[in-house]
Image (cartoon, rainbow, N blue to C red; front, side, top):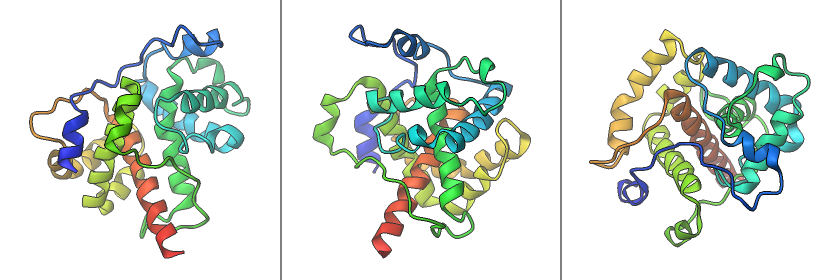
Length: 224
């Protein structure tokens, strides 16, 4: 695990300019928007859960696509655009990629029992774990997203109990800070020595939620 992470880091999770070949200027512009921080992160988390619930046609496709891939970006963009039932839609002016974590956490709580990680329903399809040869074909942003999910998987497998405790907290609160502190030892062990990772707690929480979903879904499928 540590060797695999070492191949991908250090990587900064910054929004990249949209491809010049994009045919949707509106989506291209949205991908240049910033990620939320502080109180805005709490708003984005709540908005993402609402959008995941109410725009299921698109949101269910998110975890099936590689992070920051064209398929993921499209699904998230249309999730935002069609979230008419979510309050304060007009105030969502962040990068659509920021919603991948909240979407993953919404489905995690919907589909699994956090007390024992048993499935409550059939899990959604998720992307196949790439092999090392696949990484040269990926964009830097996609490699970064996959790398963070790899780290999240390591942390979740090392400490599923404190991971569950994190998902029971509200974003940007003292309780969330304490939950992250409890996961600190596992996080330190899961990051390759000498690596430098630039990410917010909001991004880390999202990566851990997706990792928990993927791991729990794989375990559930193994029982079938």
